[in-house]
Length: 501
Image 1 (cartoon, one colour):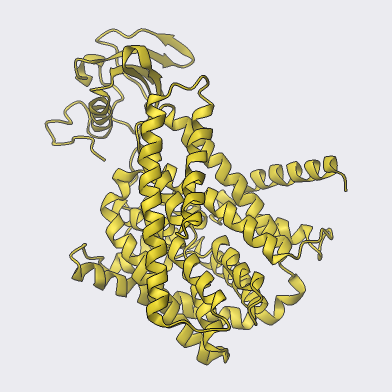
Image 2: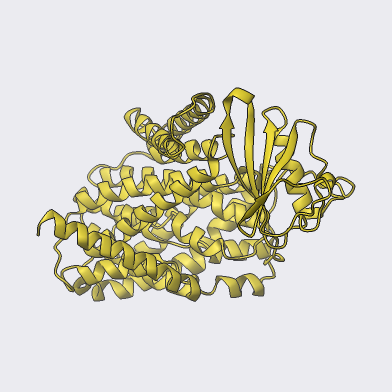
């Protein structure tokens, strides 16, 4: 086929995938299943497009995963997940180790496979999928701490699982000692964290002080910085995935110009990466080989969901309690166990041993493919019911304020664009009752497509867009005050609401 035909086909697939997201959203299914279905339809058993290179799939998959993790970091609100990070990091380290070892021990006996193959299968399935978790959980009214644990865990646990799969795949013919394995993993994580913690603040510092000629360059620069972090960590033999996530997390929570536009750009890039990734994995799979993987896949998946994941959560909760990081009650533990969704990331990880020529790796890929489809279908739609059954669902809260800023270099000030969401207690508050600091003022209101300069007695309404000019020194104070009033009304200070999260 010519390039024009490929471009037409690719555009048609993307448009069809975008349209299918609406259907998936209404049914409660992660959209990854629809994208995988497109890939299967286009493959050898469908339209006959050939794709059978695990090496290419591995490289494309890891690149797409880096984009998805960058978006995850850029769109994660640090104030929402800050208290959950310690427990999430225990889940991403101790939990991953428990998951690998326990699953390997059980399936080695049940399926009659050798130890190294069992360990690789355990490592491949140890990671929860950020895209799958975000697509389901962002529609659930969960308490901030519980949602933060799931969100942070899915961002942090990719790095150790990728390292584990790569090391185990390379050790297929030679078994390194446990000490060597742990040392290599620790060094890679330390290097990745160091790179991410260096590139993130440096990039934020530079972007705040360089006035680019076009606002559209800021999102490109931010995404490029995350890949600088990824590539730098990999060249230093560190974890690129930890580096890219930390860099995105720092940049996404820094006072950058056009921050909302940057997040929107990152979300679009991540959606495109997900579509391409899932379609490619569907192309790589061979439906004719799947029947033989159904029984072992169902056995492994059942063990994973009903035994391994709960043990992983319990062990992590105990370790977190011993280290005085907090305790997770049994209701939250039960929900965390059921909400550990596996998505495209385990399938991508399954291409690593396959590309390395590990014996039995094709069977691992087929089993993982079956597990992801069956258990995503089972767990995804039932999460709302599980949240209600376990009584962990939180009352619906008004959405946080959407704040966009544009730099006013010469005035040393920021222009904040604040949209008043439904349910906000800003509705009905008069401008003077906002009690903004002396360096800030509401200069314009856009209402029903009409803009006007407000008076001090003008009342704010839902769906209004407020343009607030604030000096750099009081910008954070303005944001905190507006969030506080949005949540608790004009007497927010009296009630102790400070808008800190």
